[in-house]
Length: 240
Ligand code: NAP
Image (cartoon, rainbow, N blue to C red; front, top):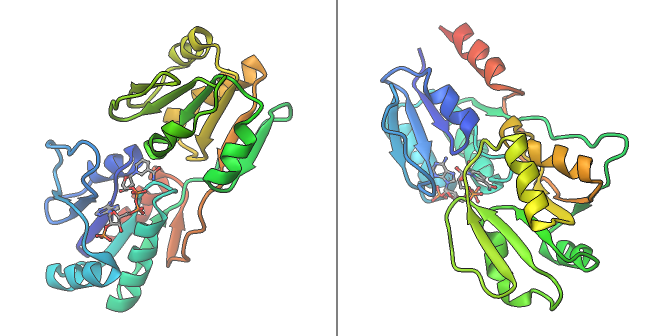
């Protein structure tokens, strides 16, 4: 079987990595936890762009690149597609479908921080679930707004912002409690399409509050797009 380089960093990628044998490689950027119980090899850290990734692919005799990074990790996805072209190997990608709003949902798509900041103006108690990016904007919080910012790791907040460190999956009842205790009046989210972080959308629906959704980045075309972990596993099984 071809040697696989699996680009990961999310739960779906880890689920795929758990099925790979010892000749294959699971690749992480090094920003989150590194699993120590995988049957395959684990590599941590960047490659130095598409050229560096292409060099690694050649050195290691990789035969298939499998991009299962987060849908907003667009740089790595572009690097993967380009490195596959440079080396002449196939690139497959796990491209999870985006969440879709229900009939009564008030979802507002925003493209970048400036649009998000403008859309936030009418609200008082936003909950950010975008990761660390809002940390760069803590000194821009207007008087009268109090932010709750949920990220993987804790960080210092300020008088107008509290940072909660938490890792998914998140349970519906815990999300309900969080929104109620903090009187959240708007949710800010990426559209990851992941079931593990979806309950917050259900709570926004129940409370009738808007969701500001950061637009998904454009991703490069690849040789094969797969929509779920099970589709990936079936496609890999068909290779052998
Ligand atoms: P990014 O902007 O697309 O990538 C930035 C750089 O990080 C890449 O150019 C690459 O460095 C390195 N990198 C990214 N993923 C890598 C991987 N799987 N293996 C080795 N190097 C990797 O990515 P990001 O948005 O910062 O996300 C970083 C990682 O966190 C990704 O693996 C992603 O799956 C995971 N993640 C991201 C989000 C999100 O919202 N963006 C959410 C959850 C998890 P070089 O150019 O030096 O190779």
